[in-house]
Length: 122
Ligand code: FES
Image (cartoon, rainbow, N blue to C red; front, side):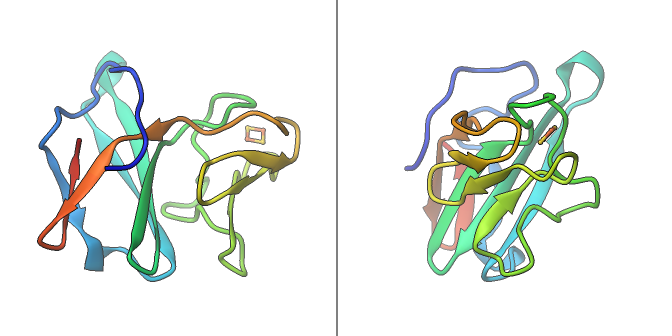
């Protein structure tokens, strides 16, 4: 299991299957949306090798989704997470913002687990 956060509206229940690990490029990232309206919940997964991390898709600067273009969460060299709005950069491993207008803040991590090649909310 990785990450942990408080329950948010629309957040899938623990045990909800998100996707298979192979659905995400390596390295790569994918965004997912659950619910709609006030119950809408946006998240994304980042894969590097056998590691997969999950974050709420919300930049700590302006609280907008990071991906202006669907599933474009990583820098061109695929070593950092980038917010496309004002180019804040975040470490993949813990979501910490290393540069940009929200430097020093972090993405909100989500608890996930991988069983038999499938990623689940934990
Ligand atoms: S909204 Fe992400 S850097 Fe401004």
